Image 1 (tube, rainbow, N blue to C red):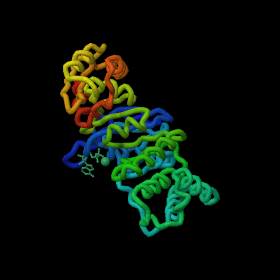
Image 2 (spheres, rainbow, N blue to C red; image 1 turned 60 degrees about the vertical axis):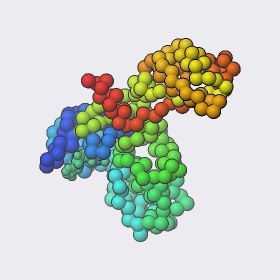
Image 3 (cartoon, rainbow, N blue to C red; image 1 turned 180 degrees about the vertical axis):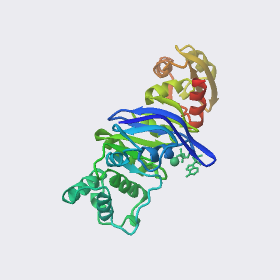
Image 4 (cartoon, protein in one colour; image 1 turned 90 degrees about the horizontal axis):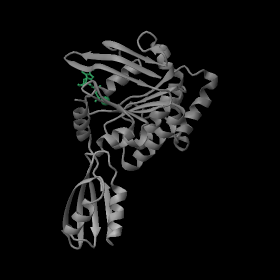
Length: 311
Ligand SMILES: Nc1ncnc2c1ncn2[C@@H]1O[C@H](COP(=O)(O)OP(=O)(O)O)[C@@H](O)[C@H]1O
Ligand SMILES: [Mg+2]
């Protein structure tokens, strides 16, 4: 669905993309991950035909984004970063307006608008002015306008930015649902979000590819750098160190006592999943496992790890 080859983009004084190459297969949900300024928005604008690259090539559904930009736009739905929506317009009027701009034939326009509103859960607010909606609903309107011409590919630039936790869950679920029908590329700087939604992850930094993997593979690559935190009742720190230190795959155990409970930090070998072993060891010792969680790696750690791996 997408072929990006040696893509570069130079703004006056800034190299935004520096030889970026990746493919996206039909049906994939690609999480496009990178810190601010990495070049995500620039890549998406090139893929949607809004700006031209300085060098390299990009194709969508076999069409060149520069030479065949009209064919590309017909097959792509785009949710820009900070999508500008007309606040005084009603939801249904706005989506109908976009359907016209996108050349949906007049005869099919009503059905297309209804389908997009339905897919994005906007049926109940169709007649409300966009400006009266919550940020989460406005984002759904952005998604509805992106898909009203029934594109094969959806390009969503930070679709969950600025949403509260409830809205976040809704919009993520919506993206996953849309991903059953369409190829989706969405950008984010939140690793957990990409892990939750994407079937494939591309990480860029400073306009260059840093990683291209499945979320599972990426997680296991980072797994060794995530210690497990346990809280165990009924055990002394010494006992915990001895018993849990003997579990296969465990490389280090730190334990401190706090009011009848032991706070434990376990390090494991990079490829080992020691959670089941730890659980059994706790139960066999007659203790109670009150908590077990893995430390979540933030994006900074991820970048350090994947770039170190690449080097
Ligand atoms: N219109 C522009 N003119 C000059 N520099 C730009 C422009 N747009 C983006 N940049 C620069 O290009 C780099 C990549 O930006 P961008 O693609 O927006 O990254 P991201 O979306 O990952 O945050 C940044 O250094 C940014 O400052
Ligand atoms: Mg951006």
